[in-house]
Image (cartoon, rainbow, N blue to C red; front, side):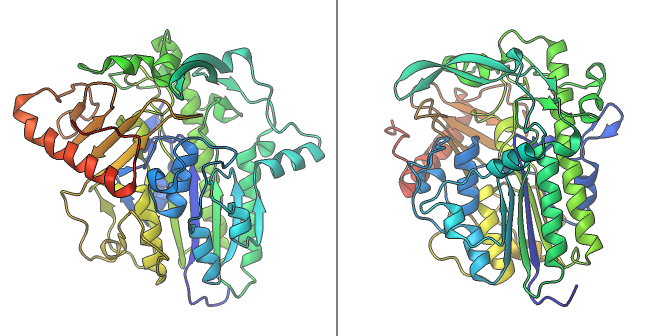
Length: 469
């Protein structure tokens, strides 16, 4: 590959992947061996948080560097009714002369929509996968079993309604591995990289891996990779926190976990980790291709998940709450010549865009909500240890349960306008099993974090928070 003045960019995201899967060992093996090797060349952000534990608003916020309250995309708005005009990282890179490639699910909602805003040199999403898989005589996905769905009562626009969600019960994906959508998209991304090797322009690849998103339909050999009996489960599987607000049991995650036994949770974990390892193998293919075309050293690689998954902890399943398993995400950033290898301060998804712009010498078109960590990556000063980041949840299909959180290096404060507050000491109680909001000795901490949360809400126009008492 010829000399390229600008570094290339590869951004890989997974869906529902938990932060603790990095460096995790289960059943005698690494869950993410390829990501662990990438981590050796990267900065590991051990306290990275998503702006919201829900797919569409999280990915829209990640692409624009703005909180959901500012973009207006608060829920899974599949039709784009709430979308508005915000510049995405794809546009910044395209305008800077990058060759753009997108492969995988596309959950970013903007107006005009993303594909019309950024001039992609190559683009494939789920509709393309289904069309091509059908043309080749292969199933785009296995037929869902009755056990893969579960009905719950969900708050939506002021009333509870019955809705269907993917359940925690796994199955084996019936198609061949090479036809699985994540493998398909990864191979298309590899082809984009190989073609880019002969181009003069630098490239920017966006690969959005669906795994380990439910339903937990797992292809072989990953369906058999982890033995349920060998899974080491966290101690709070099936156990709510002491002092948990009463309405948490009415939320979707708690309903999805009702009645699931420890033996079933072991099967769920084995399937989830199998899909996580499938995603890791896709990452490994991209890294190997970068090395083969001689582009690895001169490429910025960003890896993260949009949010996590409770997997039975707090007696919950899926996301949509503010506990660590849902809002804390894996995050790696590899940059040519970076010095910082581990950062345990809190950071936000929203830091990704300003950091990338700084690394590339580009300017933001308007106000972004995150901080650039480019200086810290180069060995310079890191953000203040007292920094706070925020996360919000406003419902899934429509405005529903309201959760807001402010997170610092030690504490997490969770606010719900219809329930008691929550306060957790993440230094002493990482599993968040003891709600300290009513402790007199922490009254000042609670007041400080509550004040920070309401100031944040006013600054970004969060109209759903309610009045500060």
